[in-house]
Image (tube, rainbow, N blue to C red; front, side, top):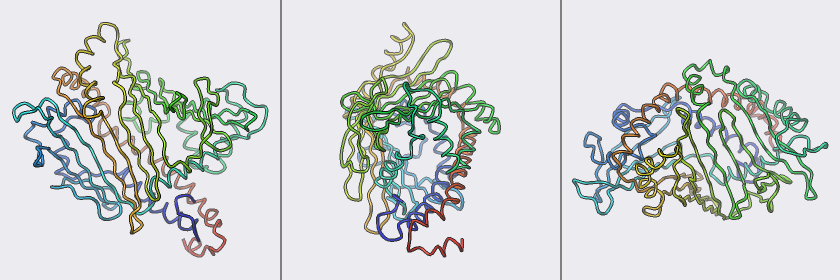
Length: 462
């Protein structure tokens, strides 16, 4: 309902909006198609995992069909549009903002640092950006929908209450039973592919019941065998990788936590009286709850880390910190993120010093050069009712021959996650998407019934 603005026939309008979005989402998320000329460019670029590391060296590669701008920026421009059941990306000569729904424009640009010469480009400002026009909804509607969905995150809200987090009991079962009743197709897929060790915990308090949405789930590896390449990749990755990301307020309390720990998928957030609530490291309430849909501005911090274990040694990055400023105005929402800390290398003693010599300057420039790595995401409603989305990232990227050599080694590992694996990955998520769509189609009559003036003739015809 929140996907459509308030007014008559809101449920009918929401149904129509979501129908268009689902059709678009299937194409762009699961059926990308690359035009021949763009594929030739992609083949000349390094794997995406090392593009930032090699950006300065890429600038001088003459075999890449760069478009040269007056300020010496080299650009690759891309356009995207629906193509039957696919979403087609093509190489284009110049950047043009999209003018029709479901159209995309993207750019990858490298600009030499001020002290560079034509024969020596040792540092560049890298930019990756995109614009999209759609005829469905903007970020504001997504925030409102998310805020209202939080009210559905609960079990039975009855004693006996939990005394400590992490125990699967009647609260979890009540939530799972409701999930199976309301979304049976999607719930069946979750049962098939995931094992839930915990879903949520419910506590009593003087301020009302507290729901700790506290997921601990594992992928049922054998269930992935229908996707053999994805199965093989995941089987190799699970024992080696840990990663986490936390959203914190200015007091160091958590608003959201997620992680991947040797096969355990973890998600944690707290809800009190249907409102998002901050919590401390002991998973106790730590401040006033907030109504997300009513926020017009605010700030938060994201702190992330990731590491991989190889030959009994840990390698990775920690202290990847970003400050995000959020602003919402009528018809428009903007997120602005800026890296506010220098990432720290994770490596064994001895090796760590060598790695710092190799990568330390690159990371320091990434965090501080030209104001540091920054990203933006915004949506605004146009006069014709369509929504314009824009997002991008900008960073200063130094050249490091030794780091580039290590990147080549990493590229060889990254080939394990090649195009064929990604295709099976998309097929897996489309299977979950199809289950959601089946539940949605079953629910449409009940949704339309929320409009008392709707005689449902259109739905009966369908």
